[in-house]
Image (cartoon, rainbow, N blue to C red):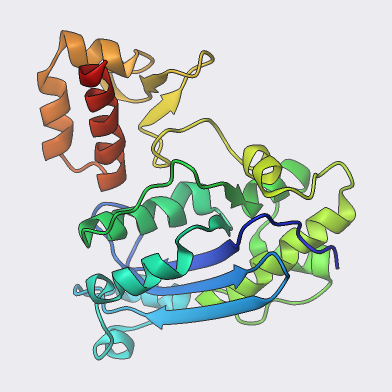
Length: 256
């Protein structure tokens, strides 16, 4: 196995939830594998009471039912513990830039945690895989590790598999640099300021909206020309982290 070269801890994580809507759905299980620079590992898994029903079709996928979580703490009760466990770490996951990270950010901010991803490198192992082979996690595990993922859609099994797949990718592809920042850059789909994809960076590194009537326009220009647009986003069903990023842009412009 190729040992990951780390300057600070790297947390592999996987989330199971009530659905795929970042704003409306909730986490029901989260598993985090913390890999330290000395290669020591620590893994923690929490079942979470989402305080809402888990749809039967979703239970059929990950196997977690209302009964399984009814006596477990809510995310708000766990948020501080989870936040402290990953504080100061980079993040890695499978399809994490599109789902797990926006979902985690939403839950953290809903729980009123100080959660900011500005200086966090985020490796999306799925993106590396798709750029190289274009398969599922089960196929990736078989391809890179020559093992069958027998407990797919269990957060802990998927988390461990993702860690092993990244090690396998480093071993197979010699053009991949064994460096967290490089891998994070390589596994990005686009340069998004908010992960959920509503605000992205243009070629000049400036924030632009990526949706709606102002798609492609500079965020600063829109907020100056149409101040009410900021209030509309803050009061609409956008992810909390998107709102946080938008607020930071507005304050930066105000302070300058």
